[in-house]
Image (cartoon, rainbow, N blue to C red; front, side, top):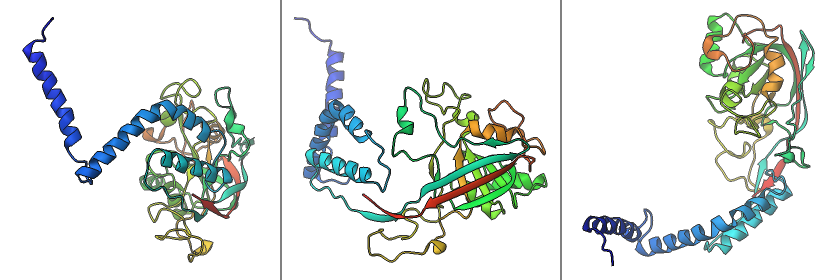
Length: 328
């Protein structure tokens, strides 16, 4: 029988002892007994999950399950049942009553110097037909203010405080204007907040292909980057002030707790805000005049980026259903 070289045996013993030591060493936050129990549970999960992950994924993505819907509760119960089957000692499914606005009306129209009705939708493609499935919410920004405004456009780069300093140096004000900002470099809720603080009456946010599109690589469905009509959704709540349900700051949003009135909530945006695709942003951007944008502001679209204000003028309208909804 062929013998292993002594060096090989020595290395194998070291590797084995490392694994053994890792098993014997208690996990942080656990005593020895609890550590063994936790590691056994993790091994059990590790064996079961890879085999069943596709099944779980298909079940949990079979229908839209936005927070505050019956489908959301259904998925929550399914997930809880699976955790029980996996051996978790206690699985709780508490309910909370939170403010969750849903869009009723959204429209954005470029009215000057040319007319263009923004799509504000994501068309489906063969690889992702679910974009138009019943129950899928359209692109919108949760917690943006209702309103109907008309104004000239000012391009504000990423819409950060330092970008407004650049505008000030150019002698450009956004007061009474609608700002167009790029996604990125900050929490999206900062952009409309800073815009409103500078007197803007509305805000549009788009993903520039320089940051999230064809400049980076192949777009969906061939690649992972955002396509022409892709829109990034999400909340624009003023999270740095406080996260969570806007009506119940710093306490669980249970059914019978005291709630703020809408006009008392500091984390809601003060102006209408909508997300748009770079396909929809292009007609607006190419109609903006004024100074040429600084080099660091330029994106990936085949245009010369200008700052404004105008002559591009936009009319936008946003109305939401500001209901309190049950989430799990």
